[in-house]
Every structure is written in structure tokens, then in C-alpha cells.
Length: 326
Image 1 (cartoon, rainbow, N blue to C red):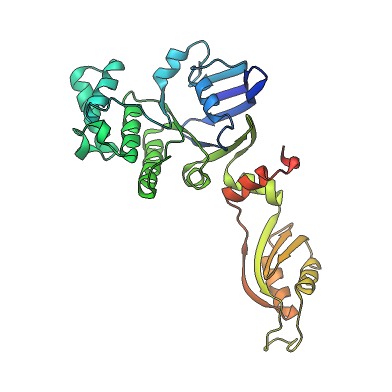
Image 2 (image 1 turned 90 degrees about the horizontal axis):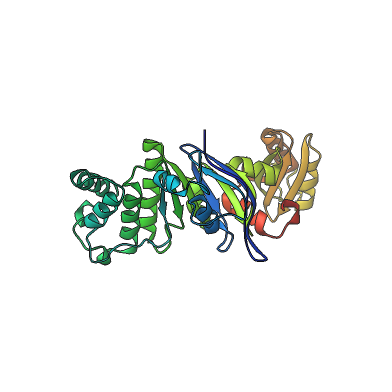
């Protein structure tokens, strides 16, 4: 079931296009990472999802509700945590949560009970009666998450939620997001420009730049599409000098000669070499054949493994200016 559906969503400010014909679906219970540089249009997209700004064209539905025609209904279903959370600094953490609960039509005792539960959930029980103005940045974000959860949302939207938080706080915050999604079945849209954070917690990612979604999928799918196009990539550490125990003892092999040996194998599509590192693209998993060929050539094989591309590789491949990916 799709929880978020954006179809040809476009937002223009005069001649400037902030979001350009965006098509995106996020499934129920999924953690989806909207990844892109600052100014890419991520926050504008979120505002349209919440019904806080109208699109120039296209449609947006959240939990099956049209955000343009029924923004209040969407807000009942969605919790939104912006980059900088606003609280009443003279009120305690508990008082801020109870106030939000009352705004969401939760009665007195129920509001207090809910606030206590959520403060425990985000590890702020010990600071429940401390004024919010005295909270650290990380504590404010955790209080913000509790504030978002007070109305039992089906969807949580997080817009750059970890800015200004120390590494330990970031790790705890991200772990909490994953727990909530798994245990409560909450759908999470995580907007960020921090690659490693997105890769750590998200089921799928969308690469967003200049108002356009360039690609979306899980890391493995994007990796195959960008780097191997469905083939295998084998990474090998090879020193092109003869081993004394080799049948070719005494003969020195250059990187170019090792490359030619590898290119002669069946199913080898391409061989890229830099110093002692070789990346071999092949139509099947040719790990065994590659190992035998390298050893037989007299070169020294230090390691051999399937090459895995991370989100940083994928991100920079798209944003390095290669027009083939536009």
C-alpha cells in the first residue's frame, strides 16, 4: 500500500522552478530517504505534502488524502519535525508535550499519561520537568520527536532532523527512528543531505537535485543501474610482480600485462586498473577464474571480492556532471 503519492508535482515561483514534475511513491511502514543538496527542493516538496503551500500543478496524496483540498485531514495523520523545532522555552518538556496533546483534543489525564510515555520513549524522563529553553540541541530534537508522536501519526516527516547534534546524539536519534518504524508501523520520510545517515536507516532513497528526482530505489538497485548495469564487479588487489614460488619466477609483469591476461577470460567486459587495484566487470561471477588467471600469470594476488558501491559512490556519480544520468 502506498502511503505517499506524488504525481507530476510542480512548484514554480515566477520563472523559478523549485520542484519539477516530481513522481514519487512511499510505501506504508517504509523509511524513505529524500537525499539532495541544500536548495534542491526537498523542503518545498514537504510543504506541499503537508498542504502548507499549493503546487503549481500535479497532485499529492498522503494516507489517501488530497493534501491540496483537505490539508487539515492530512495534518491529523502526519507528524512533522522541521530542522529547528520551536517550543515554549519557559515551559518544561512535559508542559510543552501536554500543551500539544490538548491542541490535538487529548484530555487532561490522558495527555499527561501520553506525555510521560513518550518522554520515556525518547529517553527524556529525567529531564521532563526541566525548562525546554535549557535543553541541548539533541534534547530538543528528541522532545520534537515526542511532540510529533503525541497524536499517533501514520506518517512522520523529518526535515534535516540531525543538524547540530553531536555524533552520539545522532546515532541514538537514528536508532529511535528505526525502532519506531518497525514497532509502530510508522511511515517515515527522511529528508537530508547527510549520505551516511540516509544509508544507515532508509529502506529506499531518492536522489533529488534542482527540483527533480534523478533516481530512486534501494542501494543495491541503484548500484547495479549506475555502475554495473546488471553485471558483476570484482575488486582485486594485485601486485604485478612475480612470486619466487611461481612457475614464472624471475619474470616481472606490468599492470598492463595483468590487465591483458584478465581481458582474455570468458565473460570479461572491462578491466580498470589503478596502481595495484583492479576492478573487473564481468557478465557472471568470475571470481574463481580471475583468481586462477592472476596466480598463473605470476602476479601476486592479495585479495579478491565482489565490489559493493555505497550511497556516496552513487550520489557522486549522479552529481559529478555526467549528463547520461539526467
